Amino acid sequence: MTDPFGSDQPPVVGSLDSDHIDCDIAIIGSGMGGATAAFALRDTGRRVLVIERGDFLPREEQNWSAAAVFAEKRYKNAELWYDGRTGKPFLPGVHYWVGGNTKVYGACLPRFRVEDFGAIRHPDGISPAWPFEYSEIEPYYCQAEKIYGVHGNGEGDPTAPWRSADAPYPELEHEPDLAALADSLNAQGLHPFHMPMGVDLRPDGRCIRCQTCDGYPCRLGAKNDAETRAITPALESPTVKLITRTLVKRIGTTPDGRTVTELEAVRDGRELRIRAERFILAAGAANSTALLLRSGSARHPNGLANSSMLVGTNYMVHASTFFMAVDPRRTNHVEFQKTLGINDWYLGNDREFPLGNVQMLGKLKAPMLKEARPWAPDLALKYIANHSVDLYLTTEDVPKPENRVRLDRNGKIWVDWTSNNLSSHAELLKRVTRTMKRAGYPLILTERMGIETNSHMCGTAVMGEDPGRSVIDRDCRAHDVGNLWLLDSSGFPSSAGLNPALTIAANALRVIDTGVIDG
Ligand SMILES: Cc1cc2nc3c(=O)[nH]c(=O)nc-3n(C[C@H](O)[C@H](O)[C@H](O)COP(=O)(O)OP(=O)(O)OC[C@H]3O[C@@H](n4cnc5c(N)ncnc54)[C@H](O)[C@@H]3O)c2cc1C
Image (cartoon, rainbow, N blue to C red; front, side, top):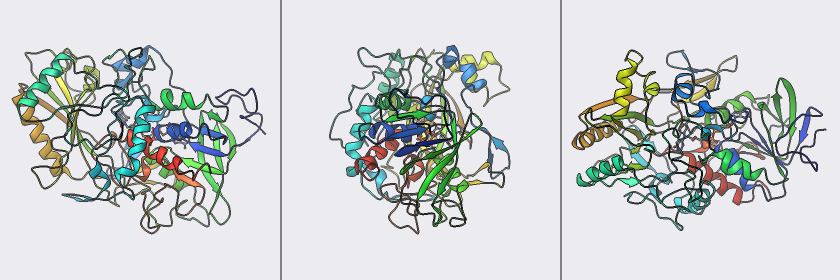
């Protein structure tokens, strides 16, 4: 028996003496949900094993190469998934590394609004209420902001929710070109604000405010991602271990299907069984679903934890658009662009329906535009990128049963997805276009994100009180399986219109603090 918790064992499991590992709590996935859970469990005395299919993402020159990251897709190492509408394969925006998708995330870490936890009406349906209110998760947002070193409370954001403590670090200043844009937005009666960001810009921090942050791995380890801020400190505890390059293929249960007994995994081609008392599934919304569906048995013919038949359904991912506002006369000198946001249309205000959030993208560069405009000469793309400010428009999408993740006979992942609330998104686009033209940018270029840009995916195993209408309970425990919790974004009842990572982390902290997992 391999005992990774024996004295003198390294934090990251090396070679294995046997095909079995025992632990108390097994966590599948080291992304935002899994890593935060490991961090929260590090002092409980429970033997925690984090199981990650990927390896450590190397720190290397290519981390900061737009060509390597975007054109060659060097770190986008997922298998192909399939589009249920067209039947075509696509490369999803999923990254199998220690730290998961946060290794390349934009580190923009807003809280969801108070209103997001209640029901909100949209043109294409209701964004349902969560089984708890903002006040219940608020203390854990504070904790998550500390763990992920957030800068700024979202100063000036007209929709900012109340908070019981300030973010640990001050807001990030806008660079001059963005400060000028903020002035123009203010003059138009809007309320631009400083986006809360998780980068290491403490006085002695490692962040150098470069252009290669959003979408890139950080060569300096200065992005506050799930590896640097949660896995690494969690591994300082002798009771937390990480095993990499280990793909969990199936979740095994007792014959009655009520209790998980072990994980069937493969590490470097070798079969491995991992036994534990409790199991946390945090493989990301689509992969957690896929694993549940692959873990069916005679007792669970439709997949594990799926008596409701809801596993895989209600996949949400936001309606989003990349937006470039170009002034051919003005070079945009900005290095770190992702400091400004606009939420004036987030809650609707003058309209019946909310429209969404606007935030800056990391500075776009020519190789990033090539995929969307392959026919355009490189020089033209370079000129445009040098003269653009780049925004990201996000509209909340509502859960629909027909938007779902499913498996085919060969176990491949299919995504059936039709975007919704597009009338609100079109209105948001219209307003932002008008605003940016007034701010002095005559040329607007936009690109709607397709099925492969699923960075904000959530849903697929909805959280709720009623076992007939949800997959997991309010504490994220599977209704059907007593010792299985889902702590990634799969339990989100709604997608809100904002970046999900801080809410994933806060929710994991909330659940672990109940003591139901380590008690
Ligand atoms: C380019 C990009 C930019 C983004 N920017 C932002 C941002 O600015 N702000 C924000 O809030 N969010 C952002 N996001 C989204 C954010 O990264 C995700 O919401 C978050 O990481 C999801 O956390 P998770 O725990 O659900 O899944 P993940 O972080 O994806 O982690 C899942 C982990 O599980 C592992 N895994 C999967 N299947 C298995 C298996 N069968 N066995 C073992 N391991 C498995 C994966 O390798 C991965 O490490 C961005 C995402 C991308 C791609």
